[in-house]
Image (cartoon, rainbow, N blue to C red; front, top):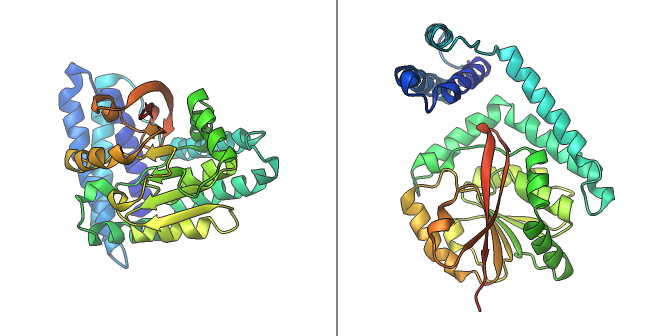
Length: 313
């Protein structure tokens, strides 16, 4: 069920993106979202069961998705891609990431290690055991709503381009000149990909902060052999920011209540560049939007990232 469910969700996500924002396709979008909720719940049920879901659950999901595809194709005159298409897309993304490593590191000797990290991260994400353990960890932690802990990833090629934005690159050069273990910090570091990529690309120390201990354990295993990368298993609201000069906020799933607390936390920053997955800092005092960039993430293509500067006189 896990592998088939992942393919179903990719198809439903594709169709939902096509239907989104089109007034005449609102009923279709609602149908797709209902179907997506059912399939996701079935996949999660499968992950909770040692022997997986019964065959009838798989059959029900298959029937729902086939019906959704028929309705989608009739209304849009577009063809929904097959599971094989998404497999091919994944392979192409990996090839792009591998090619993006060439000449990207400040220290070229780190390129083989960076490629190993990318491969290991993608391989980890593809396993049922990873998602089973992640779901268990998400459901066990009640600090915030479970949606706060939703998992997603950013392609290496996208991250390389983000770090090359002039204002970000300048901040990393300053950190490299005067390094500190907390100067570059990632809030919501997950499996550690952004921290690992940044450390190996920019040759700077990086601290990842993640509330789910399971994800910190995965990040620490992936970071073996990577110099100057540390991970803290804690609530970001308790992490120190006094030495932070470049802060990444993987905030796309943080609700309004958590964001309000984080805003109060961020007053601890003095001179800092902040890279955020949302534009909410545009409405916060003391932060100036200095740039945007677009790149691919696991949940869709063409995601907009926002870069802010906080400068205290």
